[in-house]
Length: 405
Image (cartoon, rainbow, N blue to C red):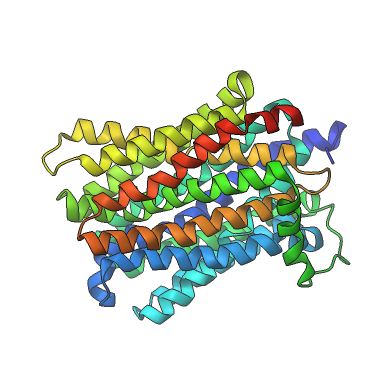
């Protein structure tokens, strides 16, 4: 339900900056270990391809947390849930300080438990304060927190690793997460005013988001699309630094900078695509274009040689980053539009379960293909095919969404 009058004016000024900051920090926490992988792999004594398993574990935790997020948000409020999320992320990073693979795996699950509820919580807040005609843009701005977190991780962590070591880099991100959890307390009373202390938290709340998605054709189709797109997004993000370092011969610092370039493009792309979707072509057409763009750019990246010019590489990474990291805000706004009244966080949690399933499956499949081929290039080709297929399905079923409007 939308807020009105003075309440809306008071609350709207806080909601987007707070949700954007929280999204950026949990995203940086999720990418900290993958970005530092070239430095961590020798210390942990594991092959680099296991980065995909780490990312998958993060999103196993995120999948469970997103399904339960609706009930937690209803009972405790979106801000309190976001505070819990930041603390879980900090605890997950602390687990990796041991340099024990099993503890790092546990830490990945903790980070996932922190990552999963943030988007349903922020959607719950934003749908109450955002006019319908601006939803794609506002949700896209909030979702720039994902690539912005990648920018922070890619730019800062390799340099901090050189100065204070990998443990110092992990501690830095964990400390910032805790500081943010404390800082947003000032907004809790007003932003969590709609919490209901008697709301149930039983296992039935895990089934409810899935039942809603399965019974709703448009939400079901959006969920399938997000599954394939997220597989591309996280495979690209998790393996880019390692691919540039091992495959194209760049140093860790330069590879981290290149990753940051792609993340900046993703952040800008999210805003641009959200504006275009609201103003010109609609959400579904925007998702079709992005599906084609991310597939083509993955295949171009796979074909680049070690001697390719940096200008060419940056161009490919900018376009791929804008597409592979830029679809989320348009998708989440469309989910919010299609969700039954009052069920935005439930619908978002259900569709995000599919999104996170794509991440659980995508990076490990990418790693297996790369290991079997002894090269990351075929993996980039394989991972993009389902996303392209889903773009074609969206084009085929666009009448379903036209009827809905």
